[in-house]
Length: 219
Image 1: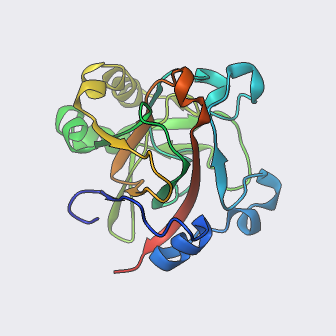
Image 2 (image 1 turned 90 degrees about the vertical axis):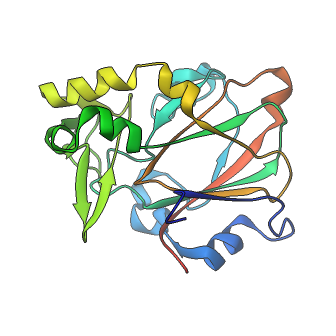
């Protein structure tokens, strides 16, 4: 995890519930307890949806069955969850999870500019910050964030980063993860890696993934 920014484990204990696997791997962020008014369950069920089936506070409400762009989960929070776990319940052979490290983007934009890039959260909610920077630190660890929907650039540095993120080159540079069998699990460092999802074709509509956030991973 420290070296690559993610770990993929195929067929990991498919008989266990996702919450059991997550608790064995690290400290689970209990969102339901932490932010009861958010309506976000601790174990989230992710299924393909058309834009008219969900609200605008979810990616499916904006992109439907299309490609989900690279982003940081809960980038508008004061401190986004450090890790996210994606676990296959029902798989599909033609839907991919896309992952990209921040390194090439930071090399292009520059660390100083990233630290000065200020964004405003689209909406103010409990647990969210009105203003966030693309690069901050938490106990000495870099926290990088980007989201094309829930963050609005406020200064030139932020607009420059937003422009860079529109470059289709990043979509061609991603690592493609296939979660197609029950138990297939990927654990992603949400502070170091961006992630997205490929387009959903007709046969991919059966796909069912569960997601859990973790604040730390056991060594």
